[in-house]
Image (tube, rainbow, N blue to C red; front, side, top):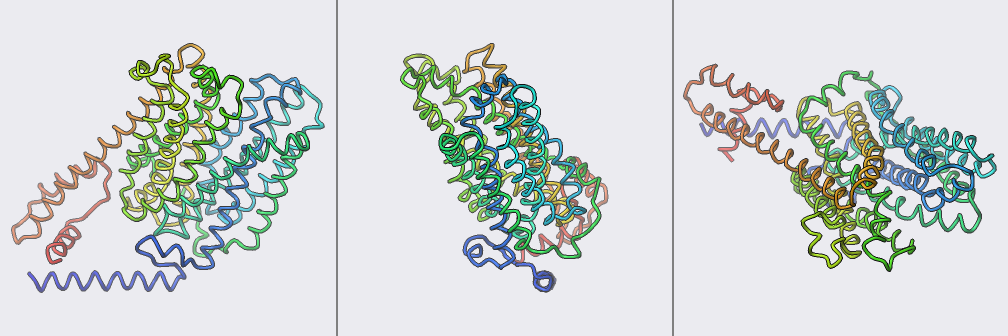
Length: 507
């Protein structure tokens, strides 16, 4: 038995060395742990990360630069508040409707070409939006604004899908850390975009913010054309049109994407409603737009600061599902404080809540969003590959598009349902709905993980039994294999199981 175990151990070490040699021969970076490795990046990785970070900052800035003044400008142009909302809402519609198509065609288009083309479209669209200051008021302004925003959203879908697919390919062994850095840059753009936009608007009017962000983004796209690493010829494969269906059949991926939808649905449900609620709970904040803006900024600031740390922890300890569930619980607590949820209203003197609870809730919301976003993106890649899908740009592109679709759908539905709930019910009702969604999703993930653990434990017991010299009847094997198939677990044939556990006993 010891000699057999020694042979298995030697064979495994030989296979690992062959795999590492093969990766090095293809020019790939072989890493096993996160930490100091990210400080020793190859020129290819540095270029990808630099371009992705700059593009994320530019995209977020172009998206949020108009938030401080678009409402007032729309009123000047004889556009209703509903029309102003449509200018924002159409962006999300195009995002979630086009992302899946772009992801499925990414290998055909080319991730590099998709990246810099999308970034260029964002820049040109932002620059064009600034010209609307000279546009006639009324329906002409509204129609052109919506059209330009839809084109900009198409560029954003292209850039984001390609950006995260490239990050996955270049940082395959440190995916969460790379995602964390990119999301930190996106958060930076969302936090400082409105500040810069408001200042430039006061300085030079409607067009100036866009005349700054548009050319800046075009320059970033131009730099990407010359500095983004070339794609390998073996990556130019035909699209796998059926892979989206295969991904949807892996239970963990829809469950985790549901967590993304819940998170962004909650965030965007607060966007049109939180300002009024904050003024309602604290009369001293009436008309104080600086304090209202601070409430929104706190979520972005804590998100921006948390994502690198969450990415590092995710890669170091690999407890991705635990981090997702923890993020959902933290987010549920944040919505409970912001509301506050009905059971907590009696803790406040006015039975409505307090400004400090709203500010604290937004801080926790930023931390929870960071935990969910980074861990979901990293775990979906792991789930797809472990279920036999190719570890290639095709899979990365499809997963990136699914994530963008979940996020865009939440961003679109959130403001609509959020305002509908608050119009007919107290704000605490919206808080209860958002808290319930987060806790319900956390419960589903815990239940799924519990079932998986029970099946894998049963599989391990069977494997240990099969590693002995006792005969195994086919009925026992088929019964346990069918239990695993119902959960769509990665298939593990009998010899692999026996070899794995023989090695474990030897070690």
